[in-house]
Length: 356
Image (tube, rainbow, N blue to C red):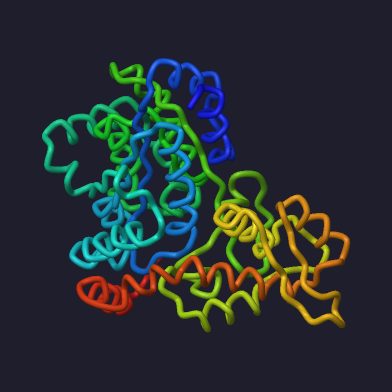
């Protein structure tokens, strides 16, 4: 694949790239740069972490990247997820990796890592300490957004240390590209600024879009802060579709979801069509009775936007179609967790109480 096609693929993943010039230079030098993403294991896994991640990781792999997926168990512990119970967090990490394997991700070309694996290296803690020494407490606290916390919120000592650990992950994993969500922007910029001072490199930051939650927006935040506050949240179950939800549960959540007629901006159902359905199936079929216009074939998200914003496509018809396609995407995951060790993992994780 030529350079421009590789850049185009990665640009499809990145809602923001810091910087495009650095990405161009990196891909000129390396045929197979290393990229990484990571998530705190904290119970059940929603479709932004599963389905959307698989789509984005597969694009990065197609563009020539080697990919590390990090189950950040110690980070979740530092952030007091699952009540700070490390054993539950690590069990959730096993579950997270199984979800990724069942989600359509090209697992033959993905290296699955746990932060507990990194912590076993002596070099890791040295890197953490060097990053901590190079930054002020105030600067580190400004990164609190990466943990799902607001700037100014009261933090524990472990949470203040968290950004140093996450920045160290980048260098310990030899990541040329940090391919995380927009909510992780601040720590990735911290790594870019700190790395060269410590003799490391300046990683390219490819921030992917944050998939909207299903509920009506209740925030006045703007910019990146708004996208973070509108995303799916495991602590608000009806804002998220989980990877092991039943067909009926998916339909229930989507049917009651926020989906204003003729509005495409900040409309989660329109967004799921864009980032999930069209990415996977390349087209959409809307099934409806003849008296309501009959079936409709949509060949692109642009066409969906035009039909929906003009009122030719009703919210309930769109919801029904999106629910059907999401259920198709989740079918292999449900099957994977229907027996054996994956089933036992799911049963364990379902009993874990999610904490913020």
